[in-house]
Amino acid sequence: MFVKQWMKTELLTIGPEDTIAAAEELLKKHRIRRLPVVAEGLLVGVVSPHDLEKVMPSILDAEGASEEEFIAANTEIRAVMTSSPITVCSDDTLAAAARKMRHHKIDGLPVVDCGRLMGIISITDILDAFLVMMTGDCTGTRLDLTISQEPEAFYRMIKAFQKTGKEIVAIAQHYGYSADSHLVTVHVREEDNDDLLDLLWQYGVTVKRSGPAD
Image (cartoon, rainbow, N blue to C red; front, side):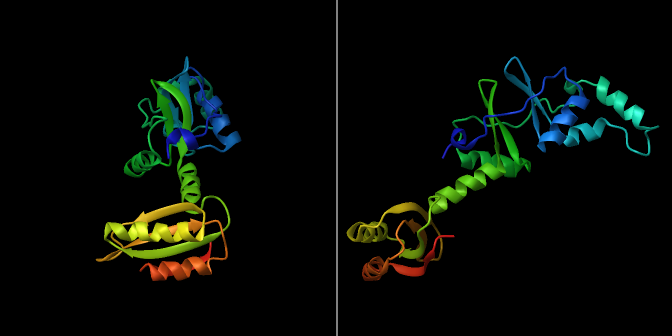
């Protein structure tokens, strides 16, 4: 799956000449953790609550609310934004986006093509995609199966689904489950699968679990 399939494209943005006060209002009102800074359609930075906190005086240092209000109303975003944010392209895979998030310990990335902001992909978007990949986003039955590591084992398993006319809506193969077998998770649309289970056993496939899809 690709970033462009799951990114959010309806975005709030702010300009580099806007003020801290304007950014703070947008962040709080819409309960978001990052605000892209855009100039003429190009991404020039990102501002977060943490960026704002770094330049605002602490309660102990401030001489009253008026000092904070003055700074917020007179400091441009360009002075506090992260000007070289980590980004991904819309044609990047979700796996590549997830690796960047994990490596840099962040929970969201601007999506940029040729300098232009196309969207934002968050860890929540990636989790949503994972659920669809694992369940097909529908009810049915989840089967956890183990097959031998020989290449023919996978094809024998698929043959069982074909012979019983079961519709596979999601499938994932987990290599290295044990020294001599792989674990395969299959989500089928049907709920009555006794004929399938019998045939899988006949074909040398071990059924570890069979039950309603999570």
